[in-house]
Length: 198
Image (cartoon, rainbow, N blue to C red; front, side):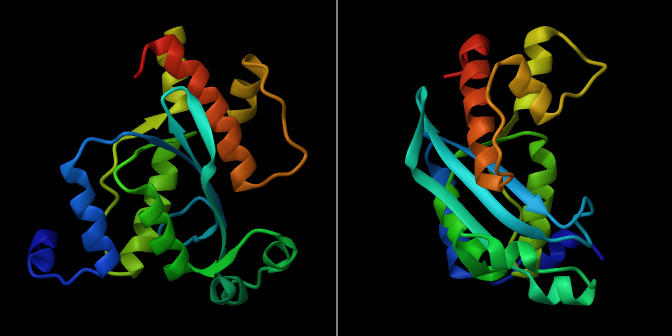
């Protein structure tokens, strides 16, 4: 069956319809995103937490951020995994549908930025599909690709820790999606200025 046929008269949730209208204007901010997931397969794994910061002009807007643990009890239980991470986390906790709606409202038409961002987008798309939504429409930039373009390196990928070491961005003791999003945002600001991205 042709996929587009299924979507012709599809009734999207209201938050998704609202999101789609935001692309009538040009984006005026970047949203730097990091996800923690249960694994690397968008078809089988789930997002455990999301962390994001806005970047406007040449600064990270600390008060314009998004942070949530996604309550994935069913997934964890079905796979015999511990939910210790969820219990211990001090972040806001939301069921997956609520967290995704809140994140999409936060994201708007911003340009998404991340480290290996295509993976984050595929994880979001899989979760959105469960809510009968479409796919993320935002433009995306990847700090690894930006660095490789700047240095003219094609045969190697760099981890987030590699890039942070190169640009002397301190490593955090806490390992969370928000901490990683903040480190990616600092990297992005350095790369953005060197590449002349406005």
